[in-house]
Length: 225
Image 1 (cartoon, rainbow, N blue to C red):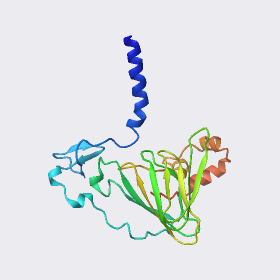
Image 2 (image 1 turned 180 degrees about the horizontal axis):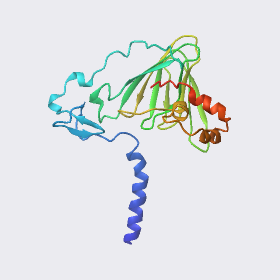
Image 3 (image 1 turned 180 degrees about the vertical axis):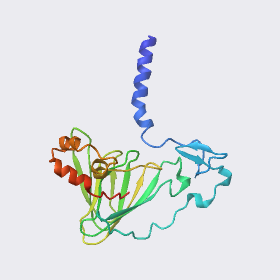
Image 4 (image 1 turned 135 degrees about the horizontal axis):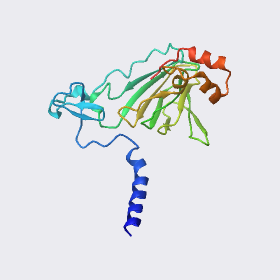
């Protein structure tokens, strides 16, 4: 009987664990403003926290997301993050924000993934073709063309992208379910790793000629976010 109870509890814990780790841990206090000085501080979520009595408005504030960003780069887009690095008061709160500017006629936020966050994006200017790819083995592409006021969700961990199909600048804002969602840009990770991945691995994985792989590895891969 005890064995049966143990198995039941184990199964329930196994089922519950994905929900427990679906986002940042819930804080057990009102806030935990991140600081770099460890003296008289508590280490939470990878950051030291200042004494709550010393918190001030500036710890929860950021200005400048209304300013258009320069998109004159190889991919034609710029991501402006507002996470715990910009607002220390976000520490332990499990949320962050980005502004994304796209150049006309093909500015792209290249295929990438956020290992720690789901993303919800709203278009405020321009027209974007967006999408994500489901996991193996389906690898199904789910896409939509978005216009100002449209909202789209990119599930946590899935490869996704945004592409400006309009002839004017485009702007979007996105919220992410982590104070530090992380980003892995597929091309950068595969062909721009440091040190480089052995070309033989990529030749086999992508079924490409070795010279093509070496050429891709020699390129400068733009770190957009």
